[in-house]
Length: 465
Picture: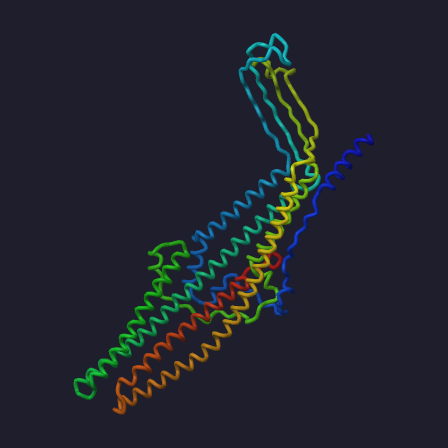
């Protein structure tokens, strides 16, 4: 009895002495390492794009999340990870199988079976139920389940991040469509004004109150506006096609997109990087659980050095001759423990542990890289948002100045104090300035969308939901 108690202790001691001391060398970055302030920004609405006030944008986002091949692939990976988790959990319980075999065989006359069966050709049959159960005394299977569970969580977070990125891509592309429509409206307004001016100049030329130079100048301004309109129409077509692709649809879908009613200034956000940035982003949360999955994988590799103890049992029938297969004395039964202890494997277990440790370091380093990128994305979006706001104020003054100069020049032309040619440069600059102003409004909307995505896009960790 004392010997039976001593053997397990000796086995554990032997296993513990052979485990190498490989340890992770990379640690995850914390918010305090990144200089994030104490500001905690308010939560972002999960459907933040509704702030733009355009029902068509809402529909486009819904269609994209329903039909996008990219999101479908992410959701398939979730199902795949859940299947792996179910498989790992199934390995933690008893395993029961039923085996049967039947064959006609010549039995050796010089082996364990004596005559009259030995040396004859007989039917040999077997029906057997088997039970095996890994007791997992040292937690190796438990660690494998923890790793599979973390991997499944990471896949779900990846799908959440893909959904958020898809919504952001749709919203930014819709901004581009709105930008093109604004440019087209500006160009169409300029065309209408310049067509009227050209008619007036031609009348004045026929009355010999204007020269051919004045007519050419008016025609030049009209051609510039028409060129701007054609360019804007092309940009809108490209944006509509991009929206159709994001929704996983074709050209017919793009053709059905109606004019935008988007309020470009509808989305407002606090211009500060929140202290809880690292907890707001689904991609960073996925990185954290991947670290947990890698840590569990390392534990699996580490606990492979310990004994593996199973319980096994069988019950069934074995017989020579089909008439004897289910006789009472053909029954067989057995049960008992089995132990597997690695002693010498040419360094395979040590290599597995070193690889698992390196995988943990890699997951941590990848997470740290994403953290640095996330902070930069948020900082860039905040800085660009402020910069565009300043540029918009300045551009509004430019547009106002060119418009006033154009009005005064028109007065001089009508008074005969100036030629129509004097209006060309100012009117060209005015149209360019108006288009630049529209572009800045769209850039501001795109930047705020980028900031939404940099701040997590409405994602909340489980404990906050």
